[in-house]
Length: 199
Length: 210
Image (cartoon, rainbow over all chains, first blue to last red; front, side):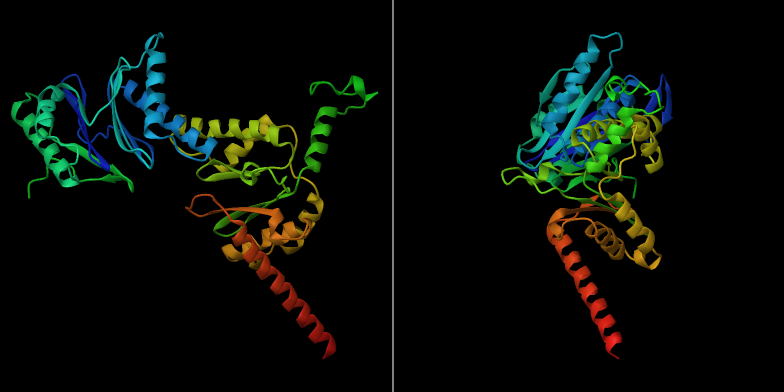
């Protein structure tokens, strides 16, 4: 039911997540934010088992902040992603595994933009674009067809809109609204919520 | 005599002394002075900077450190021991944010650190500095952020070998992050203080002659 998507450009990463929080067949919340700010230039999008998502995401968030306090500088996106993976992997074979699927997006001064895909088995992959949820089955092919590595911010937003159009058309469940954010050298910026409210 | 009663913190001497605590207090007295001033919209922490060996990287001997984005701490005493306390305090700051969804209050984290420590840390020449502040901490002395900073420097100058080179200063303004001042900025403030002192001396001389 939940959907996450990330698109990496030459100097930015665009991410979006649906904003529905459901319990069985009931929608509990229509404006739920599934993105967690790990640091000034790193966002983690987290879906999965209710409770596990927030517990795990906030735990990683506080540990990333602790690193900053201890060392005087922030973890890079690559380091944060690997730290998250190690944590998830350690818990996987304990009595209390976390069932969460993540996208980690960030901007590094030296290495540039980065998007990481991680699933509940703690598999980690760096990718130019990625998605989680049933919606991924429908939109990865759209991304395959239209993505190019040097796309502009506007082109990325258009590509994102194409993906959401496809979901509206072919996905049996309706996902009425999405939070959209952009990360670049200037930090994290909120973009307009999609789909756009009727004029 | 004391050799039998000073091995552990949990041992009292026959006349009721806890020697380990007193030794710790002595160690702290040997440390360089630290001073803290609360202004209207700013808090200033100043420490006497120990001169470092020529081959040592200066920035690795910071005596003011951030515990969280809105709280910082200056210490006097054994740096190695201070590191332990600072680390535990930093973890507690994040832990508090995790469980309570709110940053720590200064009071909370101070109480937490107090449960870790057993001695009150003030440092060498603390008495001199405290007497200076008791005399000079007035409403007008802390009227502006700059005045509060100058008061902290003046207090340290009482006991520190002359010059801004031996002072480290950090400030937190209302709704602002921690800022550690560069030695250039400290030099500027010290120069202003010296100038004011000269003007005061001039005025006094003039009064005498008239």
